[in-house]
Length: 160
Image (spheres, rainbow, N blue to C red):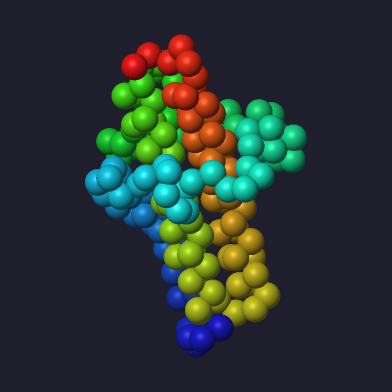
């Protein structure tokens, strides 16, 4: 804990600030131009050894992915819950939107982890665990979706 604050203030900052961080970052990222999110560049590109099977076998994504909310439409953003078209232009847009979503969730991890500046130990560990637990499932899902969309786009029979 770097900042000494009364316990009431710590509680209020965390109780109001963490949900506001989730919503504020999500809103801000929906306003960013899509050109900022290139699926073929770092950090969004496919990692060595990364595959859709990895996400299914290790993380069992198929078993729980339907439980995650699609917050994109909450702020007028892109809905990523279902594949609405097989048109290549739509698929490319969807693929870039997975990058936007992944970046927003990484930003949430970083900002929420900064709440440890005023949260005393061991409570700060709970904040860090929460930052990862609330965002990592979404990050994993976006990465798997991007791999899936890339495979669809590069299929020989894909609509051009």
